Length: 413
Image (cartoon, rainbow, N blue to C red; front, side, top):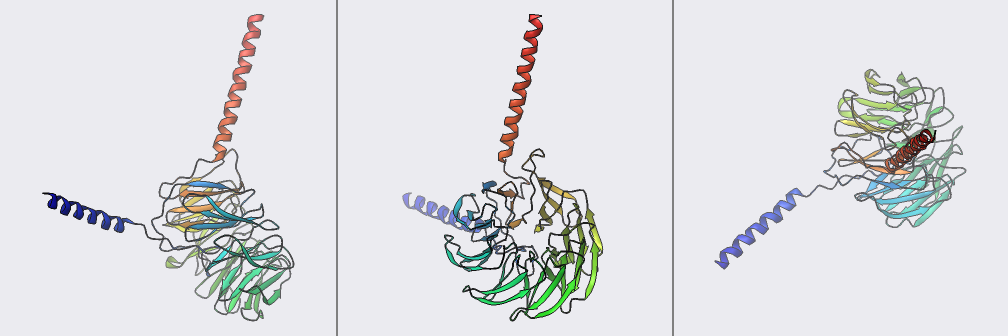
């Protein structure tokens, strides 16, 4: 009888063990740079079943830097000058590092190193384990552009109007001078690096030498970052247009009028030739990448400087009206939204979201990084709920007090 019990218990233990293995979640792919990858598609094709509790993390100032993720740690900068590393599941801080200026640039993660620019004019290389600075390179002005890395070279723009190519050991390889500040984040495809400049031009340079291959002039500053699909480069301009350019010679393929400056960057789904873009007039458009034909348009939102990411069959982006919007990518219909200010204490979302499993992570100008649950269509109860609740209690107390005082006066009369 004892032997039979042992056999049965052993069998059950094996069943439980194998079941736990089969139910264990797959590790999600990383999101190591601005807009996910070299093509800037913002589309994580195989998300894992990763749905921890929603949370928020408070930095010391606004978060316009877009996060990057590696090994379930999320990295981002803040206008308080710090670079933060936060545990992805609990939202607890692992480390922080203080630069000499606001960090608006978005980090890129390569192997064990984080590269990010600061408004103090330095490009930083940091150990992702503890934030220790391995080296830093001084440019001629502040850095808002997000770096990209190809092989052993880091490419980043600065507000001195130069694009820098810097070796991963911290030494300068070459620099190219445009006519104004470079806030657009460079994209490297093959042997060419592409970016926009505040001089109103889109540039294509030889990635090895910095020699100019071509330039295209738009009608205003180009602060949007490029994306590429099928030999075509897509990029927005402050002249209110989205441009599709031949990536080999810069010839115009088509353009689309958004009506107001396009500072957000395009998001592309190659499977159905769809491109998603937002503008400062609160317009979001889904266009056919082949000819610029409208698939759908949503209007009436706050200004959109955030670049959309994709999750399931949805797009997610932030707005200056204080909401994060999640729209159906096929129809533009709103699936759900999140407003931590409860439409009373609104603060813009200008950071671009990242997606990891079933979670959405996005920074706000209120200084908080938010972890939202897409499958539950919910986010954390923010601190502003308590502020608003406290304000309501105070107002009600004042009203009750005034009513009591009036009642006493009437009795006295």
